[in-house]
Image 1: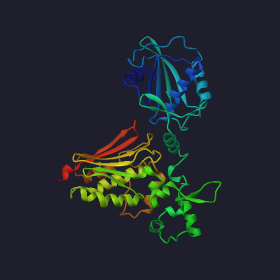
Image 2: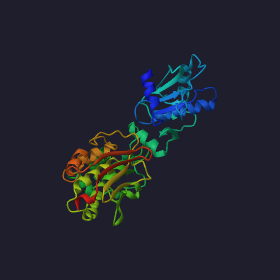
Image 3: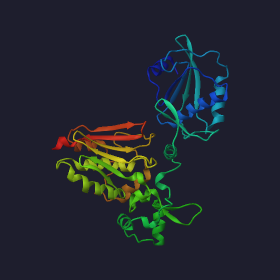
Image 4: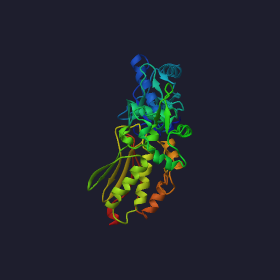
Length: 372
């Protein structure tokens, strides 16, 4: 850390990866707990390195400086973090003289061992804007999925049976498929469409299998509903992914102007359904149709890293199985917003609007008025 870098950080507002603290105190247990909570939260929040700068008044950014720091302060910080976080968060502490004051800078490095939790209470923390908060159950699941430790798609759904799968659709996707034969059961297990628990012989559909081939996945995955809002009212669309996209076309295409580039809208929706955060049980994928704009909104993991062509899948198993199993003419997953932009012939397509506070991801398309 140098003075130029510090000066640039002081120009910024507190946020996901930046926090200002008036003082650094590790004398009592409560101080240590609050200190490690902030460190864990930054390590668990995606976005590269984080910084906690001590000796700064957080509201005014007035430099108050630190006094009488112990000579072994960095060693004590490392000990506190090692004792209280599991696994320990990688950090570096340094001091810098700035405007005749001593400022402390704690760098929290991007961790390859996230998620981290507090050893004493088992809690996971993350940043919500400029504050530290306890992670919810689905946010914890997101963090584990981001590290490849847990995948929503591959969790067996114990409430469902194999009868909840549409084997005619499976047969269409997997040629020469014979219902329930021993060989085909092994194939479905290998593909991840069905699974069993370690201590049971009973076979269950996986959540990913239900999303692909379920007769009515929303019985077991209510958040998989598609909600469409338009001037005619609100329309709920259910079924597996292929069924929902077909129903969306059957119900919504007649409501749009004849020349509206429906295929582009459909592909944006396909991406939203495939890449949404299915751990979030509170929000649906939504399409909001208006005269000026059409919004496609879906819950998205806050760790999600994207590029301009939307080629980074949130649900890699689901994405790869759709690529392998769907007929080429039926679903063009991941075509990229560049192609969508071309379909709208120069009309503005707003690529990405990410609301990390609410966990929403939005694509904005031209509204119906442009094609009347």
